[in-house]
Amino acid sequence: MKIGILGSGLMGGKLGTIFARAGHDVVFSYARSDRKLKRLAREAGKMARAGSPAEAAGESDTLLLAVHWSRIEDVLKKAGDLAGKIIVSCSLPMNAGDTGLVIGHHSSGAEALAKKVRKARVVSAFNTVPSEVLFGVFEGRRRVAKPSLVYCGDDPESKKIAARLIRGAGFAPVDLGPLRMARYTEPFALLVARIAYEGKGGPALAYRFERFGKRGRR
Ligand SMILES: NC(=O)c1ccc[n+]([C@@H]2O[C@H](COP(=O)([O-])OP(=O)(O)OC[C@H]3O[C@@H](n4cnc5c(N)ncnc54)[C@H](OP(=O)(O)O)[C@@H]3O)[C@@H](O)[C@H]2O)c1
Image (cartoon, protein in one colour):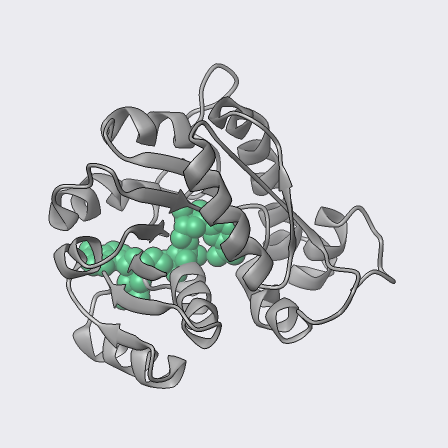
């Protein structure tokens, strides 16, 4: 697949690297420095390169959206026409201080995003896992028992693509159903993040919690 990364930070940087190492064509875009994008591309291997959001979007069928909620409008504007594109979003609708969700209960960030880019096909995925464990899961991807990772969306074809990416990253994809299920996964993702960054156990504990404590199943 040709995959454009919109937001090359903790999530976008790691997932883009994993996708490139799994054999997909990857364009890293949207960081505060071009040098960082080039370094990421170099480290991710020959399938990766750095580009602008417009290049990442123009040359890819699938996009990973991995920016802070406050940057969504900006990155979408820079990406240009997204009609027909699959957007796999791990972005959570967090407030500026990252203390809470700005959308919840009756809607979700994923649904708000789908309204902003009506002609794109949005899948919510990868947001319930702390970025720190992604490489470890990818490295263990050949194990029989894989940690599960939930996703949801309204378009069957884009969900198949998201499931393929989730599987390729080393997880067992679990289809939760329509995009509105993100109303439940987003607060859950916030809880996982709280455990990861505020609790004593850190990302490993959050990851174990996300997997409902099935420590033996790696
Ligand atoms: N981190 C996690 O474990 C985790 C887990 C689940 C969900 N999420 C969600 O995933 C999304 C991304 O999180 P993250 O932790 O990957 O965030 P992050 O590390 O801050 O990455 C965001 C990216 O956006 C870029 N960016 C920010 N402002 C910019 C600007 N003005 N111009 C150009 N680029 C700009 C950053 O550039 P720089 O690289 O230069 O900083 C970075 O590459 C968020 O919505 C978050 O809630 C994160």
